[in-house]
Image 1 (cartoon, rainbow, N blue to C red):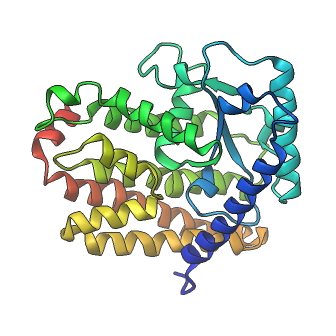
Image 2 (image 1 turned 135 degrees about the vertical axis):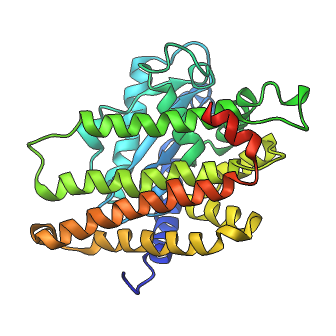
Length: 320
């Protein structure tokens, strides 16, 4: 395992680039260029490595765009808006968005908070909502972002006022688990034989390290009594590593597990510094996948098993 603290380095680099991004967008997206009503009703948040504060020089931007009005904006307004976003993306040295910007689209807030709708599987609102919860940072129109966060959490806690003393956030927990299972299925479906060895390995490791930790660090914090909307809203502002620290602070029995998880994750981040030729060595690849399997066992089984002991009733409901 690497002795360098790649977590701290990635955190510092992410903070720097996030501030540059916020400043770049605020200066580029002005009332002179767009209608005031449009700018007032759209927010942008970033997910992925920057949302987790784990950015590297090789990372691109995973962006989501939420529109607060019932009526959609015009295509002309949307394309001009994306053009400005793309200019800022290039000026700050980020790679082009994946698949030529295929995933850039504006999602209505109505669809975002329509939890359980049959439409959310194809209009991308399920993914947008779960990434908003699990690893988002606002970069444009932060006030609207905060309002949207509140609306999403309130939708999950719709019955909270009726049962404040024994409320379980089952809809939220089930959606996080559903998102995790969706990620694993998508990984199998999207495996491409045309990918080079490094790309194939990275896709697998990203599933087994950051995507897994994003989901299960959040679940570790939700396996407790007295969950309320304010707790979840605060949780959403944290990175996965910060959530682990919160869980360890609330349950001293997992402190040693959290230390191991952070150590293993630091090793994963160290791989971003390796040359592509590192993957040509079979022993390196075997070690990487062995570490990934061990990390899965550590987080999914050992950590979640320990935190669930404090809330047996919730554990039974989830198992059912």
